[in-house]
Image (cartoon, rainbow, N blue to C red; front, side, top):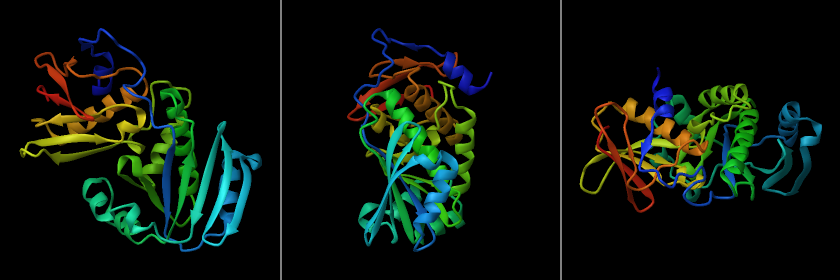
Length: 282
């Protein structure tokens, strides 16, 4: 039995008020940014890529009246999306690329170079569809597919998800888009790795941690493995699986819950502000 199966079948204790809904309401608006290595892309390239995947009626409106931005209003998978292309690099005040590169560990050197030297970007935004956890999942999956379509364009470099401080290279993203499409209709699946960052950090007292970033957009506290003793890869896998179980509504973790990852050890959840520390047994 793999780790995913073990965690799916693992009971979380002290859950007398279990609910499939998040601790708080998800962030209703959802977005992602696709970066390009080309300084100017003709709107017809976007039209061709989008309509090939979603059909001719998927593009509702194209507004290129502004010299520095082209807006495409789309209707895909029953969701309205604004796709705004800007023929210049993402402004420095919108991200700290060096800081992002220091916490995103699954990007090759060539991909790092593409992110740093990108020439233009497309901001993809859905407004208001994430009022519920189910709605948030549906929006994220639709945007995942749309990002995948844009990444198929020759000059595409990768994706930046600001709500999770997450950078994802083109190859890895497209691989998970393919998996997402294969898992259509599977209520237990969500492309968590495309929406949540897991990264190592340190507390003020010097203790090591491995943490999530991005669960807040789904209405959850960020998960933190406090001072873990196991291999980084094991904590990484557990945190992604636990995040998926929450996002798909299978489990909700709360303050003072306990969980067992093995027959011998018990971990306890302790809330610290907007974070939920997992202490012991890891």
